[in-house]
Image 1 (cartoon, rainbow, N blue to C red):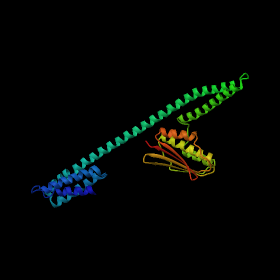
Image 2 (tube, one colour; image 1 turned 90 degrees about the horizontal axis):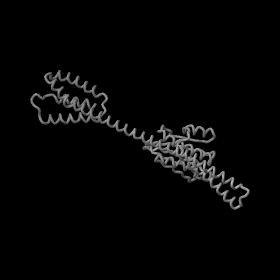
Image 3 (cartoon, one colour; image 1 turned 90 degrees about the vertical axis):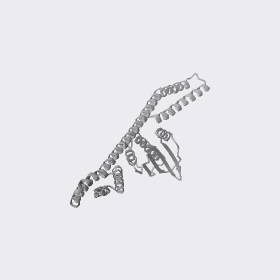
Image 4 (cartoon, helix red, strand yellow; image 1 turned 180 degrees about the vertical axis):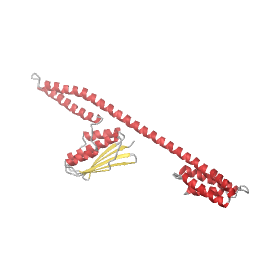
Length: 305
């Protein structure tokens, strides 16, 4: 509609110019050209060409009936003051949109590269974990075995037998701590989707309500799956039979997973939550666990990069 008004004013501005061009008319043409440029630059006129063509045809017909000698002048003024500035603004708009699209593509590629780099870091951590497990785990197992054999040696005094028993117990404890630490370094362990985790929990008799599930990048999706698995596991272990509520929110480039369930017993912070917090920290996120007013709440936040 606004472009049609500008086109009509452009045609009208070409009338009655036989006696010269007054200053006010030239200024009006300049203002009209500026408005046409701004219209093309900022307004997404899908049918702009149709409007200009329709006004040109109808206006030419009207001018031809009223003042046949000024038809060409009116069309030239329409072309100079409206059509050409509008085309220039439209060109600049398309150019700006292309630049914006290219910048968004660059940002997307950067995010994808960050995800690839993060996955590479996680794979390296998994490889190191496997090497630690194979080397240190084997050595600690041998130490525990030899200490146990020494403990049962018939020629050993009771004092040395107690020392051998302490060495064996320390080796076993160190092996267990190593296994827990390596579990935090593992890259992934094929965690099912959140919907499957919830379905399995319901099949097991749990009352689970989930809301806000959305498609996420692979790294973030794996993190959300781990949060859901750990929360459901803790609820089944420490609050059996109690309802569980899970809400996933994606807002302001932040993924938030909040899980709540009534608290029926003491709460401990085991290695599962510690490993989950470490994984979220590697992704730039955080894990908060609270147990207040008879309610256990787990909140995980991960930036959507």
